[in-house]
Amino acid sequence: MSPAVHNLLVITAMIIRVRRPLLRATILRLQQRWSEMAAAFERQMQTAPRAKPAQRQGGSETDEFNVELRRDQIEQIVEVLGDTEGSLAESGAPTFRVSATADLLDYWNAHLFGLGRPN
Image 1 (cartoon, rainbow, N blue to C red):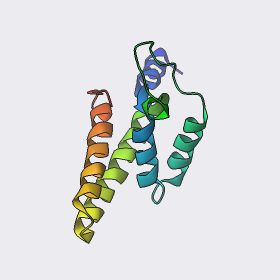
Image 2: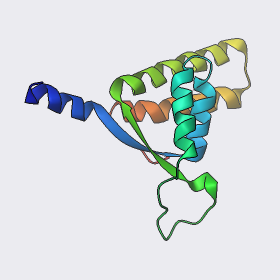
Image 3: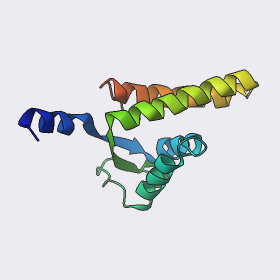
C-alpha cells in the first residue's frame, strides 16, 4: 500500500466520544435497519466507559465511550436516522419522537462533516 493510500485510510477513521444516553438512543433507532452496528454499539456499552474527570459528577448516565468509526459508517448512520425521521413524521408519530430522532441526526451529521460537538 502506498503511503498516500495509507494516510487516507488513517484519516477516514475517527474516535468519537459519545455519552451513554446518546449511544442508547442511536442503538434503538438502528436496530431495525442496521442491526450489526446496533449490536456493535451494544458491545461498546458493555465495556468500561472513559474515566470521568475529577470535576464531573454523576452516575452512569454521564458515562462516555470512545467509539471508533469510519466515515462510511457515519454516513450510513446518518442515512438510517434520516430515513427514520422521515418515516416517523409521515406516520404521524408524536412530535417528541420525531424531534429526538432529528437531534440524533444532527449529532451524527456534525461528526460526518467534522463539526463534532459535545453531547
